[in-house]
Structures are given as C-alpha cells and as structure tokens.
Length: 148
Image 1 (cartoon, rainbow, N blue to C red):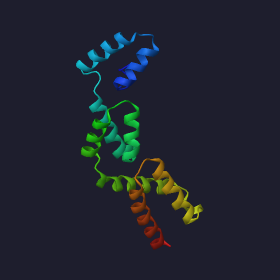
Image 2: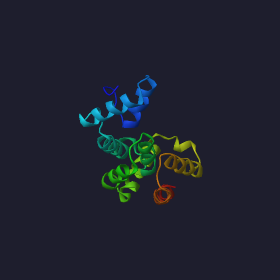
Image 3: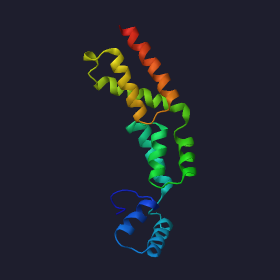
Image 4: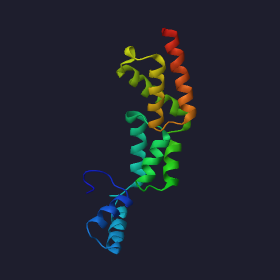
C-alpha cells in the first residue's frame, strides 16, 4: 500500500484495521514502518506544502486542513507551513492562481462584477485567508478598471 502513495500513520492504521489486522499488530507494524523510514510524515507535509504552493496554488488554510485530516500532528503542520509557506508568500500564490484563472475563464462574456465574484469565491474555496483575498481582489479590480 505504500508503493502507490506516501501514507501517514493514521492512514496505514485505517487500512490495516479495514483489512482485519488486530490493533496490537497494526501498532507494531506502524512502529516498524516508521523506524525503517517507510512512513515519514514530515516528508509528506513538506511535499504537500511544496506542491500546494507551486502547482496546486492553494492557500495555507486548505493545506493545514488536508494535512491534519490525514493525521499529521498540528505542531508538525504548523512548523512546515511556517518554514515552507510563510504568510507573506500567500498573496503571490493567490496572484498566480488568479492569473491562471483569468487566462482560462470566459471573461469576455461575463460581466466584470460576476467575474470578480467568481474569482474571489474560487480563492476562498482554495483556502486563502480573507486578508489575502482582499489584497489580490483589490489589485485585480484596479487592473480590470485600467483595461476598461
């Protein structure tokens, strides 16, 4: 099961439990997998944050939610987010998302207000902070006004 995707302790435990493995055997197996380096929650968190920033273009809130849902300890999640995705870089990631979204949207056929509302909603669903959304949407609105 670890050959396809890196899994956390919680995910391995759930799969072992679903397979009928006793809790004691599951606990022992997980300890061995961690000791042998097959389960590395720090690496999982670092990869998720790196991909979230550079490819998926999602905000810190969504990454925090996804990682804690997978069972990565909150303290580790916060440590990785603080180091690899500081608050100051979130607006840059949001801008990249908006640029990509505007390139692929049917902006010409939408009213400007509708387009702005949809982009702001997309930013919110992608886990960006309200402050970040406000900054980026203000910039987008000014840019669209300059084009008009």
